[in-house]
Length: 174
Image 1 (spheres, rainbow, N blue to C red):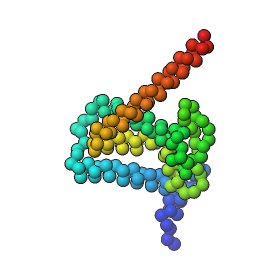
Image 2 (cartoon, helix red, strand yellow; image 1 turned 45 degrees about the horizontal axis):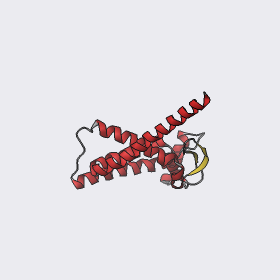
Image 3 (tube, helix red, strand yellow; image 1 turned 45 degrees about the vertical axis):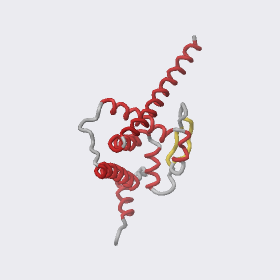
Image 4 (cartoon, helix red, strand yellow; image 1 turned 120 degrees about the vertical axis):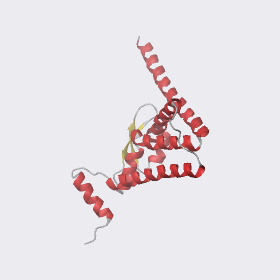
């Protein structure tokens, strides 16, 4: 009897989580795609003769960290980005300031489910975004810093908007 890879993965997933569906093959595809992204960035750096910095500067680390936070939230939660998530997720409810909560679609393949979990989770997306931005610092540092600056300014603005809103509500309550 010859089992297909899909049959084997289903058996492993059933043994791993017998009372809950876990899309392990979807996770494997995501891990493979991430590996391909990282390898592509490394290959592009090698082909262009660019090398990673010996030690990233603290300013770049701060800039990329805040930009990663903002872009991850934009991709995973922003209402305007919902068409990108729609094939993998379903609208559930508003989640506060211009954000949505979505549920991963259970119909379809485990790969689709795994992608849905990835793209609706800002914490999960952060590694992908940080890898892309960090690769960008090596391959196109000026453009990456410019884009990261816009994302960072937007993140800071978000926090200022929320602080302003709280201060306004506190003043109205007095």
